Image (cartoon, rainbow, N blue to C red; front, side):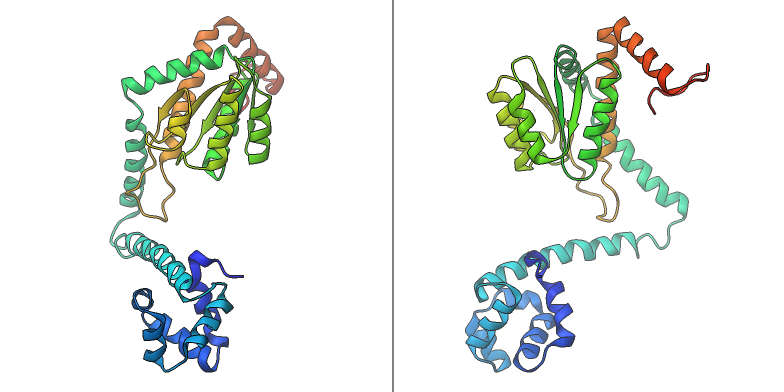
Length: 294
């Protein structure tokens, strides 16, 4: 099966098994794929001495309707390959002269930058506003999709239910839409998204707001999701780090979640402390302190 936006991988994988005309076409593409993007089918066919129908048949064998569609996916594949070939240089040759401490310093610095980016007065004002809405909500649905955002959605549930709030995380897009449709005025959706662009999250936000629920999002300022929620806590995805390095945005997201949980706990007061005491007694038979629920 061909992954069209990674079509170069398919061509390379097929090359050892090709023969005749298809072999000539594949070899020419791999020799200089960037040049193929800018030529007409007639020019390409003449260059290697094959017919235009042969080129079209080759394109269709890979999963494209014709040469034009093939060139579009080839261009996308080149962009992907250039990004990750650059990542190899950054993570390999450029790091080869660094000590272990220096490499850890680079990672530590990226985390520190992510944390500083959300340690501003404006962020804490929005965190307070979000905490007030969450504290007063009879039902809190927490949504996240993908990798770290889904994990952090579950962590938000972990932080909030221990304070006596009715918070449930959903990481499946169907469950998110169905849950959004069950919410009503006074309820709340908390969305965690590194990009703010998944259409499933945007759709769930629209559904929830359509039924009167409030929406809070941790997402980039200029994202699609930012324009669909009542309270946005802007957290930007780092774009200047090597592709092999985990994005430090999750540290900023975790920090904001902890700030929200802290504010909610202080706003609720004694009832939250009592709930935490009960949770602690359930998980820790010892009389010394253990992190509640961890």
